[in-house]
Amino acid sequence: MKISYSNKNNLTVVLHNSLINSNYSLKIDEIRLIYIALTKVDSRKSNMGTIEIYAEEFADMFNLSPKNIWRNMQNSLVSIREKTLKIKSLNSESEEKSIKWFSICNYHRSSSDGHSIELKFSDSISPYLFELNKNFTKIKLNDIRKLKTPFAHRLYLWLTQEYKMKSGNYYDLKLLLNTVKEKLLIPTGSYTKWRDFKQRILQPAIDEINRKTNLTVSFETKKRSNKIHLIQFTYINESQKTVISTEGKITSPWIKPERPRLARRPKVNAGSNEEGSWKRKNFKLLFNYLKDLKKWNSSAKLTMEDLKRMISYTKIICSDLHKKFSDELIERQRKTVSSKKIAA
Image (cartoon, rainbow, N blue to C red; front, side, top):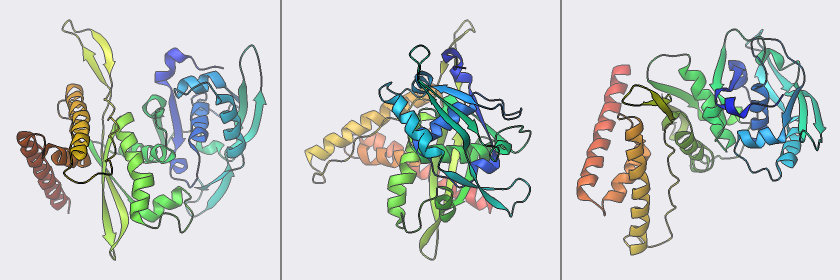
């Protein structure tokens, strides 16, 4: 069964929370393959058996070029069927087991219907995907289908699982750095320096989530023995808005605007004209993004990281804006400190 493109905005993926918190490592197309397969099943019922995924719908769902899609799907399926994930048993929290994702993996070539793959989720993973009535998390595929990095997908699942178990508008999630590495199956000895982990894995994922999903995320770190050992994420679930005309009619959905990708700082001297041009370019991108955010939600704000960037940019552009952003940073930092004291 091919997915109806007109209904793809309503497609959902449902996972048992133990599966979300399990240890596994998948490439981006392998994650996409699992997601699109899960949109074709009913998590309330038993394992339905084989699932067929067409190259055409895979490309359309994730806005990919049709070129090489069939080859990428084949390679992903070959790779994922050899992989296992470490997961806690549903019968005993102390018991951990290694299980396979799929038990059947076949390929079909067709000049009429288009190339497709056929797969079946393994019996060992079925309890984490089927007949679910508690301890599960449901996400809209449309909220995450634009993500392009594996860790962005994993982090989004962890954050979504957390806020769906709580109430309110602002949420916190604390994760030990070593736990994050274990869940991602990062080999011991890799990314031992916090700077490398932050620049190559963490920050790109957060930037992508902030640009492309319904969550707005920031983070801070905690040290132990002068080493970073914990990451605390603070985030908001920015639900989809609706534009309503003066006649009271719904005109169109209004989605949270995507944060633009900023230009990298050129290798030039500080204070040079080239540096000034770079700052002005990024200022314009962030300033227009901020205006779009305010149109979408009048209470929306830049992340603390982007706010600090604006303070740096406006120092040479506009003294009034520089003071405005500086005052905002001081006020937000003051509120953060006050909130922590109250929580303590």
